[in-house]
Image (cartoon, rainbow, N blue to C red; front, side, top):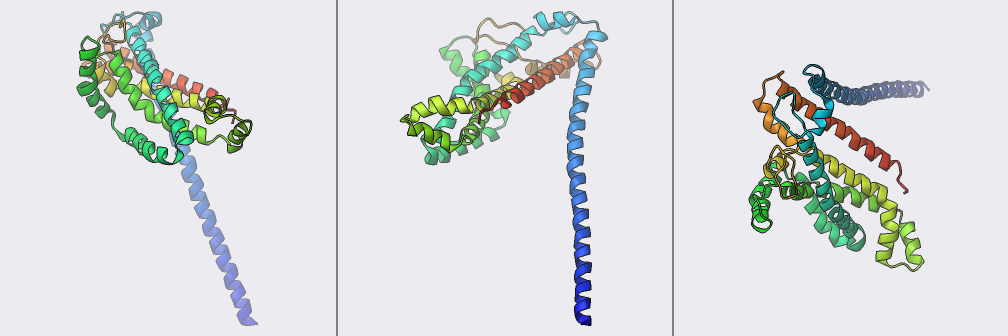
Amino acid sequence: MENAQKSENNNHRLLKKNSSSSKKNEGRGKALVYSSAFIVILATIAITVFLGYKGIRTFFVFDVSVWNFLTTTEWDGTENSGAFSFIFGSFAVTFLAALVAAPLGIGSAIFMTEIAKKWGQKVLQPVIEILVGIPSVVYGLIGVTVIVPLLRENVGGLGFSLLAGMIVVGVMILPTITSISADAIKAIPQDIKDASYGLGATRWQTIYKVIIPAALPSLMTAIVLGMARAFGEALAVQMVIGNVKGLPESITDQAATLTSIITLDMPHTTYGSVHNSLLWSLGLFLLIMSYVFIIIIRFVSSRRKV
């Protein structure tokens, strides 16, 4: 009887000890999770505030006109400088790259998930992973040594152009669009596809009239995410676009983007000068556009049908 009582007491103490240890571990886990979330939020706010402060100094300290800054094309590092050429270059590269990458990415995703599910994934999935892991400087080197000479010989001009930037960035954002599109198509319930086949639709009719419309919000999200990356790309674009501070008249002309002009000019400016402040304003515009892309993504994602 006494032994049974002692055993019961020991079990009770062990349960209390385990419960206390479990609560401590749970508390540590909560503290770690909340701390991580707080640090991420704090870092985002700090970057926004810092870049906002540095960017708006141009317009309050040096009396630069916001309208002239956004609409004029002359860039000389003074109060009369305008960034429209670089803004246009960034948007041109982004949209042209999306025109290249979106059809290829969505087509590859459909091929992997609906046409050749077994060997398509075995072949394309590793290729996509390799493309994701390639550094941007490698894309730039390939662009300089392969794409630029190819354009020079077959299209004309120097080869350094918006067209070269479009091709390089299009290949860079291709894996992003492909992988997200493939996940979106996989997420479509099989019942919807079976219902289409049951009504007598062919595979291509099902893809065109059922799968793509059902996955369209997610496909649009993939494209916008790719565009967001393209808009902020610096090194690869800088190596192939020509970096001419003027407004291009065609896609075969040389141009510059917001990111390329910041990386080129920032080391040659004096901290606190007008030129330095103008570059910070370009960075602020990039941050604002990043937020715009995020808002578009959240809006499109909220309209998912499946």
